Length: 229
Image (cartoon, rainbow, N blue to C red; front, side, top):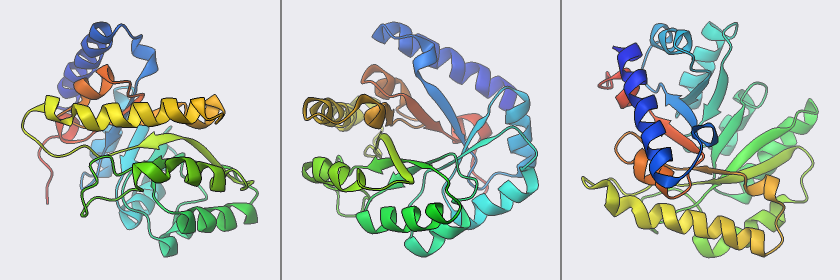
């Protein structure tokens, strides 16, 4: 099932890139394995997936210990609390969900102890829904300027969660806003390498996200199936 699902997802990514006039190499597929087993992850790795996303620190560390000999780049995509940072800084490839300067300060403190550079994305609440995580779009430039003083934290772009809607096109304004924020940062003089990634798009809306400029799509159930809660 995972093999067939990945074949289908890759074809859809290719078609979405073609529609948008983009090269498929511009989009990284992150398989989000939340609630799925290490065996499921191994199947995905066997199909050429090397970017794996997790939403909970305890689950990520457990799977990392089980699979640390596999060629996996681990992405943390869920809400990150300051007191949980210490558990993942030694191995995480990219943290997508940094939404406050305090979390950034904790990442810097922990990473500096081993002189490790941690790549992060700044999460933006593009819908301004109170229950959603992320900083306000109006605060993005200030946050980037504040992060610039850190030595061990390297910001690489932006991330957002679109509204959960039946029609993927209704998520388009959220994706467009994130892209516009990226362009505004570039206009403000932020170096291109600090905004190279837009992490947006999930199983139900990733094609629209690609059309709007996504460089990383976070797909779980369309790869692994119904989540075994």
